[in-house]
Length: 96
Image (cartoon, rainbow, N blue to C red; front, side):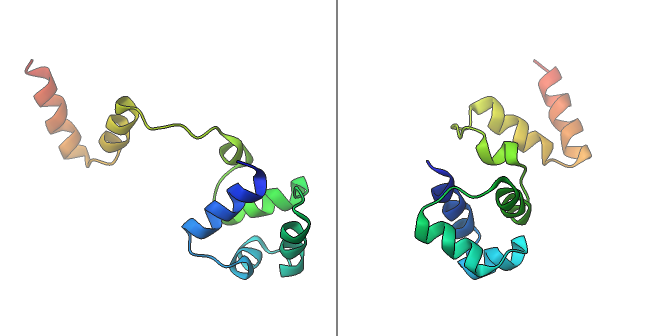
């Protein structure tokens, strides 16, 4: 996936128009329109602003997407539990 495609995917996931992205990233709409019309890679400063609008880092933007493993899903779900539920899960796991 190229940079513009990824920006588009992230923008559409949020239900944003190009204008919304421009406002959130504090860029002009013409800056983004020029990127799309020229199919050009954005400058680093522009990409930083776009990532900031999405609430992600440049590293997260360029990280390879991979399918979530069962371990990843388990850790994600455990992290979202309340402390009491974490304790209950720990108790359950110690019973084996």
